[in-house]
Image 1 (tube, rainbow, N blue to C red):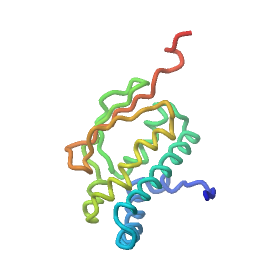
Image 2 (cartoon, helix red, strand yellow):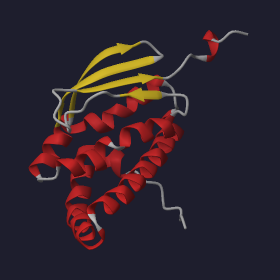
Image 3 (tube, rainbow, N blue to C red):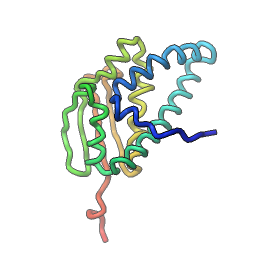
Image 4 (cartoon, rainbow, N blue to C red):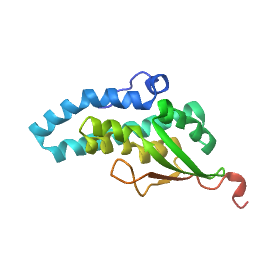
Length: 169
């Protein structure tokens, strides 16, 4: 049974890094207690599904507030990069493709400092694909590696598909 809640503006006010740390500090002991009581794999699967649905909904809300085109999506990156949370190198931004590498991820640093890098992947990295689905159902994300999983950078490759003017008549 899903119930509608008031619009969530916390991310816009705090930035994502502060929000994720606050959430993690509350969730970690709850997740650990539930994993002990019900099994880690089962609890992590419920957590994964829940986080994905939250991210998809947040993507839809961002699109409603900003629009769903690549320029609007790039504008929303300010929430994730706020407080120097991510250092990114944009490799391509041509109106269809937005490709960037994350060279430093303070989210990964924060989850490691809290001693739960595996939960960092579940609570943060896990959101990226569902968020873009909710933001623009035609957009696709490819990501081959993440800092959270030990790679030297995160590879984000967004394809927003052809614009309407490029399609044959």
